[in-house]
Length: 132
Image (cartoon, rainbow, N blue to C red; front, side, top):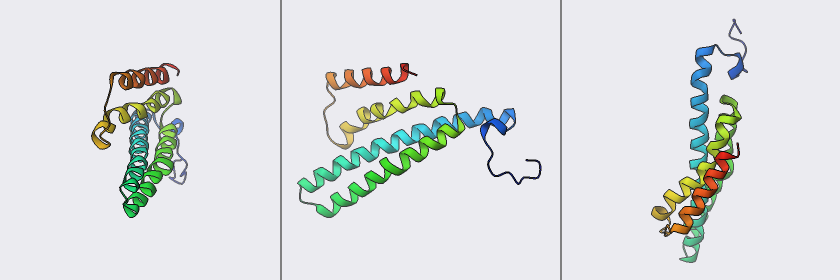
């Protein structure tokens, strides 16, 4: 590693100061992944709503973009996050999907946030976080 030829540097081979900052980057990537996944899910829902309004092209674009976010970007951010931080730090962040959806859906989809939905989201989030 002294000659700079080792391209496969991991958190365990870096000096102490550099590993301290990598876990924060890993957590940020995991949070970004959950946000991308949530936006992707909502775009898939919007695509269905657009198709019901007979806007086929708009619906198809939303479907493809939503699936790309959900299937490609979300897992890529998760993998990068797990590469930079321990699973014990990243795993609780995966419960953020439900938080993002609860916060964003009323604004983006016009859904009503009822007490039952909010309570259900809280139970799922705390269960996912506590299970680690």
